[in-house]
Image 1 (cartoon, helix red, strand yellow):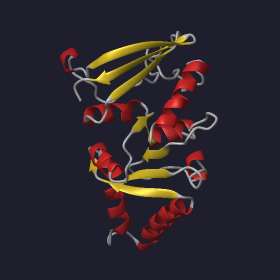
Image 2: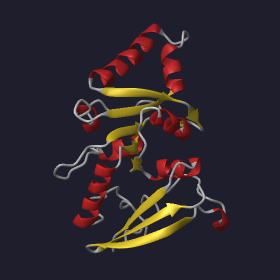
Image 3: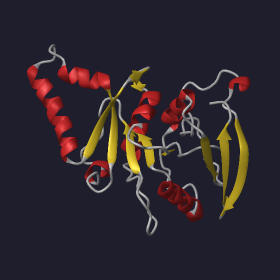
Amino acid sequence: DGKIATYSGLSKWITGEKAREHVQNLRHRYKAIMAGIGTVLADDPLLTCRIEGGVNPIRIICDTHLKLPLESQIVKTAKEVPTIVAVSERYRETAQSEALPETEKVSIEEKIGKYEENGIEILYVAEKNGHIDLNDLMQKLGERSIDSILLEGGGILNWSALESGIVNKVYAYIAPKLFGGANAKTPIEGMGTDSPAHAVMLGNSKVTKLGDDFLIESDVVNT
């Protein structure tokens, strides 16, 4: 029924081992992997490639106001796995604001310093509608020769990515389980479209059976 977690927030495990192994192979293939701060706060993921001989993708966290916990697995492993945290330029402007009390200004600078000490690269990006401007982020990542990204975001980031036109392909893993729940999380949230005629269209679809699950791979037609 399209849910990515139960109403209580539990999501391990929806799909079986073969489907999860397929995801790990994608992490090996793509140059980077991207998630939002909501996913990190909810799941505390590693976002690494867990197959023998696999290559870890560069981790990119969209974190508009720098809420990434210093005790998270992402921060703790940043010296071993290259990690970029995309932060709003307005956050930096706040930290440098002359109107900000000196004590608060120092605390923000110290906070940023602690991330950098742990191996995190802070990347300042333009803000759009209160969130990271994903088009600006893609431009900046492209300048770093990051030419492919696997987006493993929650519903809000997934919608923002589709709305921004940066998505080329969708991997949909479907398990034979029905969760229900009006408040259970779905893959795409945000505002959504106002009409079926305005839906994001997918094409060139291919269906693969992975154990008891199915994978539908599709190209995004109208980005």
